[in-house]
Length: 522
Image (cartoon, rainbow, N blue to C red; front, side, top):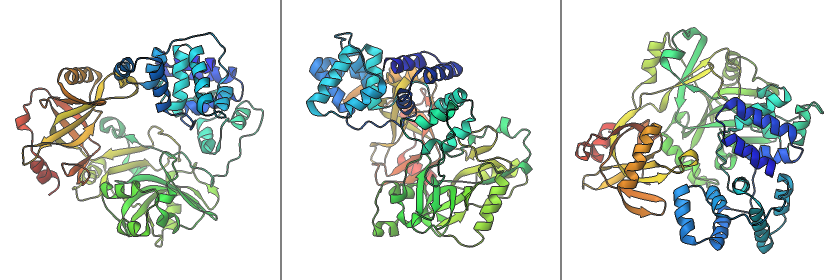
């Protein structure tokens, strides 16, 4: 446990990517099994400890410290693990078990025995060790290390290609004994059936027009619409079909009418959309389905969905990921030469030059898409976000002025700042109603000023939420607006973010809700 705690502390204290990788490689090489496997799971977010929750530590510290002091400290620090680790006094210098022994032993005890064991560990730990220990159960390390970076360190440690690790990652399990045996050349690469796992998806970079297309030849790329749904992976074989979200979550039970209708031997990549017979509806319509883990037949009938397919990873037992995109598209075109409902091929867009594609990208709002995707025809299917292969070129955002109403603290590096803002506009009754929430689009300097505004202009508190004076106008960028029964204003913004902070603009100049609805909905 001490070695793991030291690793986290060192990772936090360096901003250098190469230094972080070196620290990880050093840890993996010096730490025995199964401890390094448990650490790997914690670092990549795959460690699941179910018998202890955040509320457990809150109650524990309230027994040891003044409740009012804890509340003030928690409000100021903004992170439970950090608050408890700083408030708790070290009582002795007892030995802390190794990471694997620690977690295994805690999994076997309950009730008062569990409580006593946790207290003994906290009493024997310093602040950094307590923080690391609590984070194992509450999650959210936020140490500047992504799952991808950890895998990169593994690839360097084992001198193997990162993509080879990605290909088998979702078929590996704690404590990763077979993975480390392969990386250390003590055994062969773990054999994973590609029909048993989710395969990490290939992602696109936001297009930087003046950089990415300056010298690019349009003939080397294809374009297709960026559909306004959720990314989905379809794994189909003789024993059935499973559907995965872009993060690898199994969503098969949420869309039984799709999984039961699909037959074949393949792994497809596409976009799940609301609608029927290849006629997409809005993302707001799809959200009705996303909230249902086991929908009824009646609900499915009134809220149908289908999939736009735009890539194939495996087909009839063949791994096509190393094949160029144009070859994979040929296989898709051949497969979809007849109707495959609820699967439909995502059509490519014909264009002669970038100027023509730009006009298509920003086509009228009645088209259910967010812009276009631009893909290099020679690109293999590589997990992650490889440079120069795929680009997303979204429509120009819509803009609206709104008034800051409420604020909440952020997370991680922003846990000490009020960085999550609810904003609204006046309705016809001159009542200020919220139309969205944003937490991005501003600089660190602007965040400091916004945080000061919240602290000095607070008029009410509702737990972690502060209501502020209604005096600050912000210009909000968003992708789309739709009607919503869940919001008091009756509308919902898609991907709202700050465009500008209008310190100079009076609230009387902000458009009303009715004007916004007329501009963007009618």
